[in-house]
Image (cartoon, rainbow, N blue to C red; front, side, top):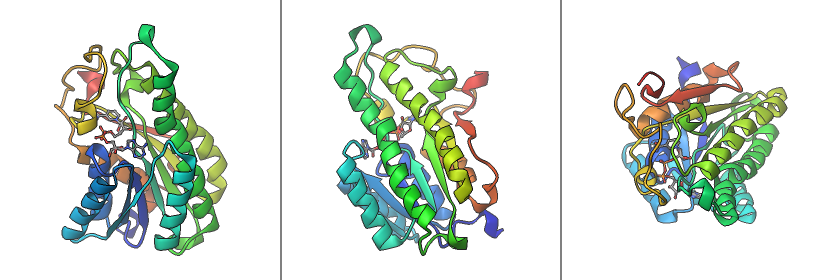
Length: 258
Ligand SMILES: NC(=O)c1ccc[n+]([C@@H]2O[C@H](COP(=O)([O-])OP(=O)(O)OC[C@H]3O[C@@H](n4cnc5c(N)ncnc54)[C@H](O)[C@@H]3O)[C@@H](O)[C@H]2O)c1
């Protein structure tokens, strides 16, 4: 079953200090990956890496601010120097605050896009360069997996106040297609997971007007745990999924049938 194993491979997970990212990190570590948690919350990233190590896995962490290009470049250089070129990059970190359209500000828009879409572009560029170059942890001399975490809001489970958020996730989903095309010659696949209905610190603590809209209801199967999103990410991350690229997988406990 080695095609389903991440043994000997490095997985870089942004936003892995909290919520869904922490769940993704756990699942990838259980599949054998050395997980590097990349987060603006350095203490949280360190604690999450320590928890994975305590559970018997291989893990590390790096602090970075996805909104800051220099920080992203420096962190990626550090990761590649210490651990080799990652096989997996999960663009999970994101801001989920709300601001109603009629009260919308360019400052809020820019802040949301700086992390959710521009930050994902910056780190993907840096890590894809390392994947293309082929590092010591990239088996077979090249290739890789990039998985973008957008939102089930893109397929209709929307919430008022999500103009900036949803458009940043739309940009991330479009980035999937653009990257899938340009990276296919390097055997790097790029896919999107659409999470939904996960009671994380980020979702529960999002600032802005009270959440209303179609996305505010119980999904058919109940609410997801962060690890459930990790299972969707794991599918795209495995060597077995080598011919799966530019695809979207909603892991939202059945919003579409609720
Ligand atoms: N929770 C849900 O139901 C849900 C639904 C759809 C999509 N999502 C998406 O899933 C992802 C994870 O969400 P979550 O609910 O776990 O949120 P969360 O807030 O609990 O975790 C997000 C993590 O990203 C980190 N982060 C924030 N800004 C950063 C920056 N500038 N640089 C580096 N790291 C940064 C945070 O420190 C945190 O650890 C987000 O992209 C979110 O949009 C979540």
